[in-house]
Image (cartoon, rainbow, N blue to C red; front, side, top):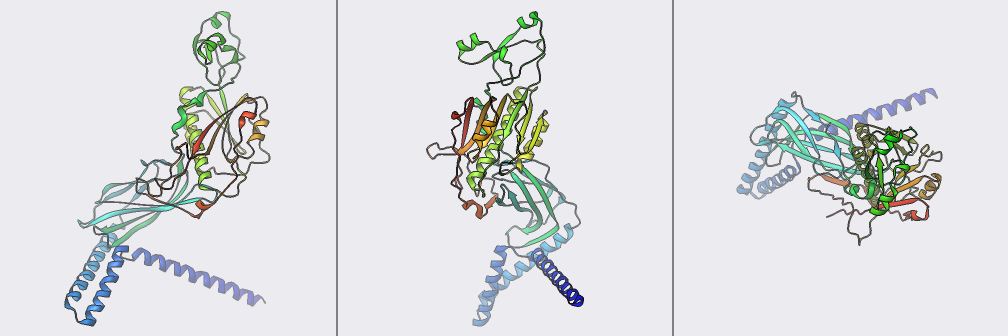
Length: 444
């Protein structure tokens, strides 16, 4: 019995070795295959013409076919000789430049240390890979750039949504006719986080708020009398509101003393990437991606206008406290890989929150329960929803954008999800809501 088991293990090991050898051979064939797709077609046509010319004794066809085959051989041999010479040249792919979703100005750079191919040849850098933009949602990315050589090669790169990009970079020498290729160097693999893109709607009434934090520090009467007036901002004390001026100007006006020792403001944010849908759709991915951009724009704008503000952000079971602008940038990278999930059963509310900013999507089925859990806290909801056709605005996704990057989604874009939680938060006392419609178009 033991002998039979040992023989079975030996067979499996031998089969595994055989498959690995087959994979290595297939990989070697792909690397050293000398023709591109147009070159392969030309070689096939030339061989077919040569065979036909020999059969019917056509000297003109024989000369043309022979010239085409000779040109392909010469070009491929010259390219392979250059590739062998460049194999020892150090090449560095600089992937430290941040990638931002939905922006055509992204670029990756290759430092080639002075690789100069012959006059009829160009240096080509090819990037391919998959970007995870949802739980089971991926985009396949293909981009290629060429140059006459030198110290630096720049490649534009367009990625429609934020996520995690698993990229593979390869180098080759190609002739200017695009018929032959010769790969060289090692395959370069990178994992790059694609940050949420810019958000254009942050200049609306986004910064308006209702509540604030009371300052317990005692002031002298003289200090209380010396103040200046400005518009109300989130975190200002209730007792500093000038109600007479506010009623006259139809907006909240606050009295601020230059000598007041104010408590540091803490802005509480609940980021709800929750849904009970089991599959991601293209519209759902677009809504969550815009929500990430909205939150990042909100944090940066608030921090720019109020440098002393801190942020307490809840995402599922995680809670983050952000103080410096650099911490907001790091949080944006964390958001890149934060996709839809079921709401955790043991989630906790933000501690002692008097005012809460909720960021959510139209697929958040349990938003009413979340609003009830915050009790008497002043709540402001920012929600991305599916755009109606009459509105004519939203996110636009292009398969072939202006940056010439080929981005191909998988079969997941055909997923359908009919459950959209279009709840009116006006039914909850003290709740205000601002919506951002999102529309996805595959073609412009």
